[in-house]
Image 1 (cartoon, rainbow, N blue to C red):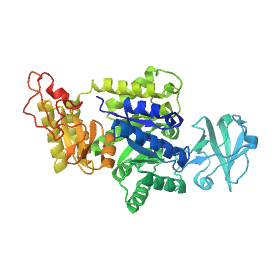
Image 2 (cartoon, helix red, strand yellow; image 1 turned 180 degrees about the vertical axis):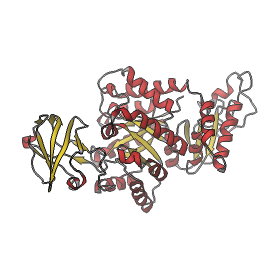
Image 3 (cartoon, rainbow, N blue to C red; image 1 turned 90 degrees about the vertical axis):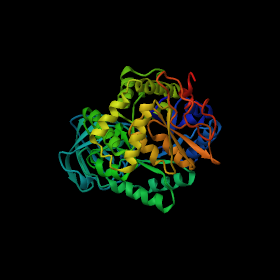
Image 4 (cartoon, helix red, strand yellow; image 1 turned 90 degrees about the horizontal axis):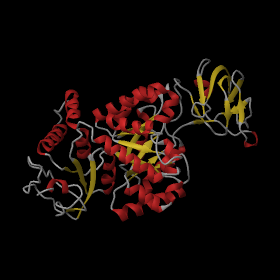
Amino acid sequence: MKKTKIICTMGPNTNDREIMRQLALNGMDVARFNFSHGDYEEHMGRYKILESVREELGLPIAALLDTKGPEIRTGNLKDGKKVTLKAGELYTLTTDEIVGDDRRGFINYAGLPADVVPGNQILIDDGLIELDVVEVRGNDIVCRIINGGELGEKKGVNVPNVEIKLPALTDKDKEDILFGITAGFDMIAASFVRNASAIREIREILDKHGSNMLIIAKIENAEGIKNLDSILEACDGIMVARGDMGVEIPAEKVPHIQKLIIRKCNEACKPVITATQMLDSMIRNPRPTRAEVTDVANAVYDGTDAVMLSGETAMGRYPVEAVKMMAQIVEDSEKYLDYSSYRQRRVSVENKKNISNAVCYSSVATAHDLGAAAIVAPSVSGFTARMLSKWRPNATIVGLSPSMTTVRQMQLYVGGEAVPRKEGRFHRRSGILFYRDSEGKGNRKGRRCGCGYCRSCDLCKPAFSGS
């Protein structure tokens, strides 16, 4: 059983209920709805399919709402046709609402002329087109084309190393969050987070409407990296969004930043998601490249709580094969993790004077010494399961809660298996510190949970093998 969680992005593929069902059966723990694309009718249709599948299979798969976020884009072009930008020539970006051509183009952020100065770099279409600012004239930004290419309509724009004064949340983001609250989403992934104020603004909206959705901050620009500590303190988790990050900062720095963010999240006991292009070639091919397999495995070795599939499951040719492959990579990689060594490294930097922290550490150490099959963590909010996951026990963490929202949110914590508690009994699966004796046999004196399934359920059965 894998400990690292898998997030699958919803899209045209998951309009097919059977594909959604197969994703769930083969390792999907969280379903991501990307609100950069599609309308409410599309998202609600897929959400209802998800509800139907998790009800049928009895799996508490969480729903994650990924906001579009504040972003800069180019505008429309004459006749809707691409234009060719040639290196060495001048190209003007303007905030005047024009139809663009090969000499001038609209940009949707009115404040950009005030934010940039000559010498700044402007990247378009994921960095494929590179411009250098030569001069700012009112609403116009005159640029020298460094790397040319074909420019299409409404392409993303990045301005590395420039503090952009975009609002933390757009009106669309606010409407999408309200939609998510009404629909019953479990988590929000906030895009292009630059500082903690964006998280606080989202928290105010959630509090006002009585929602306890988790807030996951997507770190994807230099300013977000700079303010990582304050963002981490304000949010419930972090997503390492390597796509835009690899454009905003030099690509060769992304691996180091990924490791830094994962380490800081581990220390802060906040879940961390590693995302973007993890098995990208499986959008087109039935098998990943060796580099992609290594990328997923290294994220597991670094200590990520979850890995994410984007286009692979949303619109790729092999969505089910992609999640199967990711589950196989994750599960095999976990065999080589030295959990006890990991805990010793954590102890060297931790202050266990915090009571909850000390109790969870002691529980994990005891479970390790006894060869426990599972550690049960009853909780209303999911806090106990999260604290236990910080110490990376060998045993499975069984999170129990009367709240289905909490049960689904616990799907994001590494090593956890969330179970709803129903009518005073633990529904479907559970177990409490069952342990093996020195010969590897289950100890019949282990305590039993209320469901009575301990000798046969998937989680606890290993504790009784040979008994």
